[in-house]
Length: 604
Image (cartoon, rainbow, N blue to C red; front, side, top):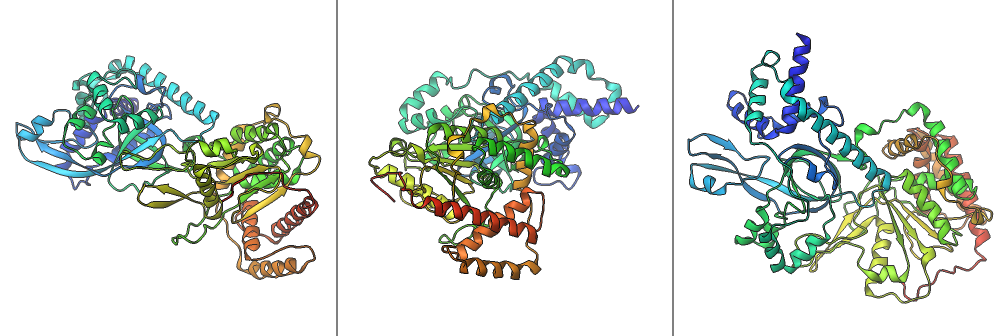
């Protein structure tokens, strides 16, 4: 009997994944029997289904898997919120010609004429958002997503061939039998044509609207328009994991363009051959593009994994142990408090400027190991040619449907790696100066301007910034840490491809875990910290030790403790911070006699 129950549950779960609209219809019909929530229990029902499934049971949606997944299937999708489109008001319930109420929630209405001509209607609101593959994601994350898509596709299609044989009247109760019966009675789902192949009607409409055509060409493959139902607290640039219903309606964009809709209303009507629609049922915010169920770290081995990571960073940095320590801390840094006032800086800002880096090979070595370790890295060369090429921050002109592509629109936690070794004497254009100003804003306050042509909004960011340069960076920011490489390290930096980390997955999980760890300073240490700051400021050659320096030390202390898996500052760790800072400042004093060879003819 127990086996029959397990089989019945498995069959019901598979039916809910293959034909979720049938399950939703069943829940809607049962809504009158109980005090139902506004979504008549849909989110709760599917959340329970998802919690019981194996990772590969729900098809994983990527640019490569989109065409192989049947329409109206429950899918799993991870991406970044690129733009928040205007809310949509839609017919959520209607009476059919027989007088029966039907729900259109979590789906697209194809036969609008029937709805308009018959019975009563109820309206609701949903929030469409443009979600793109996570910008700056590294190769191993892309491969991880592709492997998940391939694995889930194999499981899904192997189940398809055996599902009919698994159905049995003897192993299903009434509700499960109705779900399976509804699923079987639905029209068969078929995969849609290849992406980015609009119908002739769509092509004509696209040609008639040049701003739309230009922006559609810029949409990256793997983009979705996700419809959010209810309050989900999703914000711009959030990384989200969506379990929702994949919907492709080829004629929707053509139909909307022929209707008398304003431009903002058409923004969510992107042809589904370019950006499929996803009706979100369960929506979760993630701290990285790596799914939560794939990131589990055993904190009992934190010391061992930390040493493994530091050893690899030290070798890449030419044996410079101090530089490796600061770089390790920067990889787990984050903004832990964003102020409401626009003229204040966020708390937790640190910008690491490693100086004495003289060539592209050294930069490539750092870039290579960061790309192996971190899920998101954005590498930018600060040459005149690159700075002058195009705007790096998002814009939206009056004739555009959504925000433009911009290399600085990134998810929180993305490492911003700036290469100043590419700088040569030259002249910055207006665009170049604006890009430098945007970088300056990130370093000073962790905010990025979004230009809407007639007004500007500063969006909060959280980009741990690493700057590689020969002399001190031309960018100045709050919490800036200038760290000259040791003399021996400058000639010994090597590509990390020669240094395979023994268990890189452990290191990656360690970095994710350390970054989200909590931290506090015991009250009994506060007086000690203030006394030490005063003592350091009075030392000969200490430089300008002020409130900003103290804030920087506290940030380093927080990162140092969390990197060891500790949640409270101890006197020993505090003394370790002061020792590191003294060693760093000694290097700066030694380097001051050497000129900064960085050269730009125009500055901010």
